[in-house]
Length: 245
Image (cartoon, rainbow, N blue to C red; front, side, top):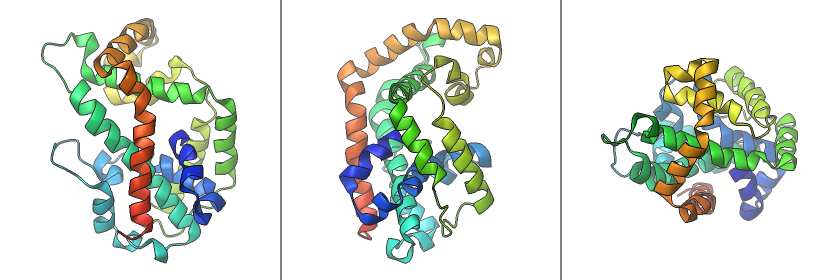
């Protein structure tokens, strides 16, 4: 949502500026799979199981042709889809440029420095940095409080999407705190030690080490460049969609 908020001024456009709540909601919604308990591909339109070139926008439009023509959507629907695509583009940037080259599992890596651990720690750190902006978090909550859930998002049931509004707003409440790692990053790791208070406390003590190892793999310069790269890719994908590519 923070990355999407950065884009609203860059993209302009009456639909996005007038329906920022729908735009920000869309940016959070690919992760609605945590409510649906469905495979990641179902909401991200991108498979982690193959390195073949993929186009999540093309796949989304092929699977849900009613969404393929933005001119047939309401302004709220177009704003929502633009936000949704910003999430997909940011994720693709991370997977292709960061996860695959830097954090793919290595057989000789120490257990505690496995690539999946370092990947999640670095992602959480980038999220934590944006959470330091209290004004941004307040802005997101205010925008979501006014959101009109689009009627035409055909691949998501409306009651679930309305629940997701509350979940997304709740996310914007939380200040930067590593104690929340177990909820946001730890659940993806499926590590038994993160399910106990003692195990989590021991893990948090090691966070500086994990974070240092993650940054070393990526390099500080490329860590700092991620958001700009993701924004640029998001703009290209959104503009492609809105011009009916």
